[in-house]
Length: 465
Image: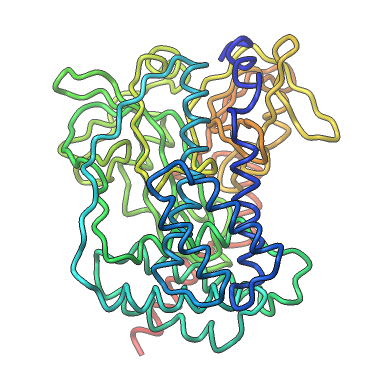
């Protein structure tokens, strides 16, 4: 990425972005107190949401919903309308930011071609989920109590029983778990209003008796050249998301794709040990650790998301991710984002940064070209890889994901080239996929023991009883 491209990104936020964010923030604050009794401030925020979509097809339905919520007599359908309006505003913000990014980098993006949704068969689990979300909105985050948290179990269990509703089930379960961990919310000094409203709105839309197409599903074969790994770790789950370039075997243009594998975990399994939970995917892990090309056969592709089937992949020759980025990142075609996934926080675009210097100050670490600066999201560096803030600060070349966070563009490093003690060093998030390669870290791991092996042995002992 050249300084001129950074300058284009930093010239200013798209028109109306700040206003849209303020409207969403007002709705989120209203949801904190709940809709049982809507005060003047919350009523003003709801009216602003209706005004924001007044020039769209949502106008009449959202205006009606706002009137009913303000009056204190509203239905699940009214809440769905509000969730839809909120999601539409964030989707528009996502599209504006991604359009700015594509214009600055000259990235080509495929259009969204999925047909519109249609009514689906009435589902009891969806109805149970809507009922719980309705009660949650009435109480507000400050009003969440033990009874409401206990009631979440039934809709989660019902949704889990239907494969098509697993996404909704996991989302509800995660939201309830966060509320449970924060209980009593009324005593919290600061409520994560944006995050919880994001989860609530998404769940409300997924719980509708409506079929939402995910876009065309195709089967692809070819060469997958990994660019970098983004690790997502939660106390009960770990996910490895691989960003790469797919060269289809049928001669079609190269495409930017991502694929992910995940595993359940317990809170005591952290750091490099999480890789041992993913041993069911040896070909993927080998390609990441050894920086190799993957030959894939007949893998399902939904937009830009490749469903990983390890048995249908084979690790091949070595490939330098930095060379891949230099040669293939610019001409590769990016996929459109599904409508329900359009949110500024979901933007994660692979980029190659070269020829920069770094600067550390009270505001954090930045990379710089001439008079242009780009903040570095060092808080996103995973404990399961070799990248550290010090190594990033010593770098002059970086493969990363460009994100929109906190009202500004930031880069999340996935791999860097640096000079440490006058020696060139290269590190990637996936380097420890087959085991720790840093002697110091390996020594620490040896002292603490293999938590995964211990837990598996204990589980096996319990099952044998």
